[in-house]
Length: 114
Image (cartoon, rainbow, N blue to C red; front, side):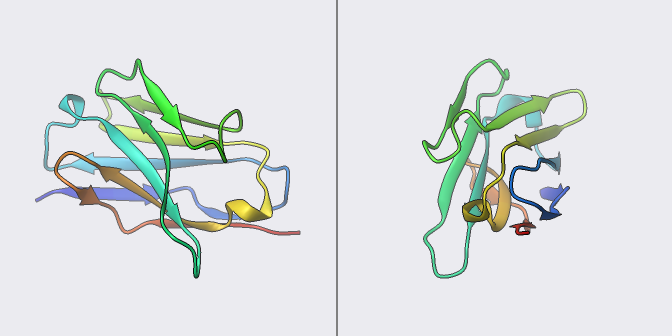
């Protein structure tokens, strides 16, 4: 059974940082690219970042480029999203997913507010 379990969300002040984690199981994690997406109320879902299977290639949405960093540990079957210089517009539910077979986690809420 495939599971993607996100953690690390919470409430943070503007300018602050958070690190999201996503623990994967039920598939051969090291074979697949992984992504983070987010969705805010009344907004379309946005693909935030993607990392290839080896962890050597990353891509980011323009809205987060230079502030967010995606990484992975294939020994721990975990993908991370380091989020710095957070803005209120980053408030959303963040989802980890495996895009090839369309596996999704339940998400973790990130709220940026003073």
